[in-house]
Length: 130
Image (cartoon, rainbow, N blue to C red; front, side, top):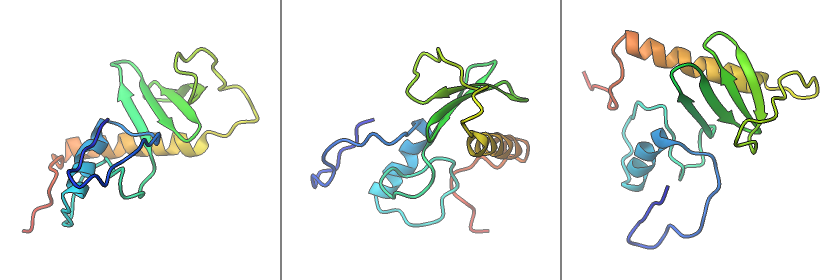
C-alpha cells in the first residue's frame, strides 16, 4: 500500500503487516480525525494495535500475526505455517516447540466479534451521538 502526504512527511518503507481494513483508519489518522471510530482496522501511523491479516476463502480462514500464518476451518486450526512460508508448504502444527495459542485466541475473538456485529447490525463506522 502506498500512502502520500503533500508535506512529504511520509518517506521510506514500512514492512509491518497490514491489510485492506487498515487503509480507512490510516487515512482518517492522516486527516487528523480524532473522534470515536468503530473499525476493526488500525492506523499504520499510530503504532497502536496488533498488526494482523485475515481473509476467508469460502472454506477456510487464513490468519497471519506475529511469526505465524494459521489456517482455520471455522472449528479448529488445521494448519500452522511460518509467516514467511508464503506457499504454505511446511505445516508445523505438530511441532511441540512452537506456541501459537495467542494467535489462535486472537483469530477466534476477531471472528466472534465480526459475527456478533453482523447479527446485531452494528457494522457502521461512526458511532451515533444519540
